[in-house]
Image 1 (cartoon, helix red, strand yellow):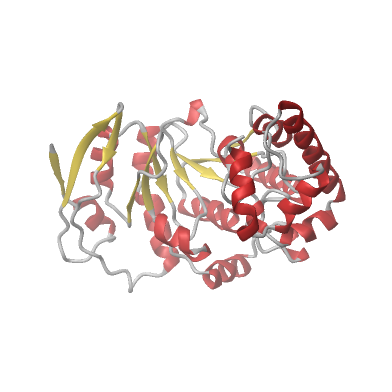
Image 2: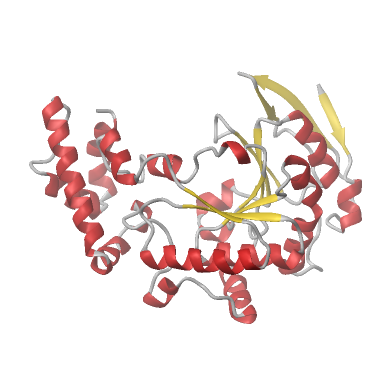
Length: 337
């Protein structure tokens, strides 16, 4: 079954040019999950006359009715304590829409990040903006003991369990994140301004660039098992982001003043060599990681599982070295038990 969607609402918002857009959306049912077929036709609209900021604000305001239809809080805005989410929350405040700010506490956050998030949440709560911190069912340390390995670039189970877990009360909420295409090749390819993401298979991800409110409302009725995501910063460059921060005098995480280029979990494999700097700043975290590696090594040895290392400390140094060419086989086989 195909459904034709017309962009009348989007044209009223000024998000499309003169050329018409026709989308064919196929309803496809697999395993109880409705999916959107990406075989659709869309003309590319021209935004050259609009500033990046104006486009982002128009996007947020344009989809507010969809957000309110899906959840009484309106939008649910993810806040990590980093520069991107700092700008994101400010855009939502500026747009004057209804939204909730949420933060996932990972149990690996730097102390500066924890204090920064608490301070900002206190300020926003005083303004009447609802804010909420969510905690995972278990800590990172318990999770790794359960998996009997540390996460790495090939097995990032920590993100799924500590940051991307489903929150029942926000099941159908329209999410918004500070992701940008300029952050990397993978994000440039996989992320966009509007996304519908299957709850079961994250690889089944349909992306729309400034789709219209009317079409999304129709899709929403058919695909209630999917996430609906709005990313206002998707097309922002690094310069545009920093210019906005300085121009609006936004208070950002103090870790940026210590040479941090990204704010995330202490020891995250994606930080690569910067982890050495992190462990110099937070020696207790390093001690905990080494102790964890020892416990994992002992447990694997006790159970007769594969062990490529003579000691837990050797496992830690191997993991910290982040040599992808030499890590691939040992770490993948560790993951397999």
